[in-house]
Length: 244
Image (cartoon, rainbow, N blue to C red; front, top):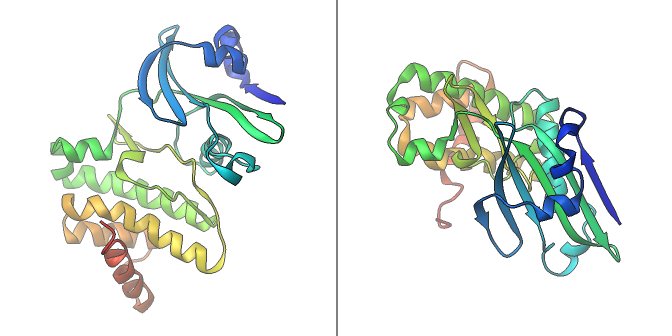
């Protein structure tokens, strides 16, 4: 059983993106490849698209999950857009099952033009990270979008700097979220802390203590810390101790 959706705005690309068979036959610039999936970049009419294809579902029970990674990824990107969080435009998506198990699946997104991930900026020691006004502008967006997710009881679960893009205007985009999900209770609190700690792993090497505190206050939408904030900050700072 196969299901495939090509979004209305992209029906003119049906010859290339109109079915799973067509998508798995596509050739393009290889971006990544591993045992489970590959990503290629193709260009049509001057626009570039990223095609992510899953050929293996994983081991054991993962083969039978009702929401495999590829499905979670397209649903989460659409959820970001619904919440007003800038993200990659989903062009097409779908999957095929065989005897109840995932056989293959794919997701196509439109390229976010003139963007670079924050991890790349850090690696290259980009001078923008030393520009206080630019950092403040980016932090405000990042804090707001992270808080929006968490207010909906949703966590990214892989909120690394490489999964946060920024364009030439300093606009922030969230991408690559195949393991994001909704949580309640203790697990929600734990995973919120994990999201914040994941962001801080690079921030602690790139930003000042004042800037990191500023980010947290923006996230909390307040001017000063209370006792609960101080406790959470301790958890954030020590979250990955012994695991790195």
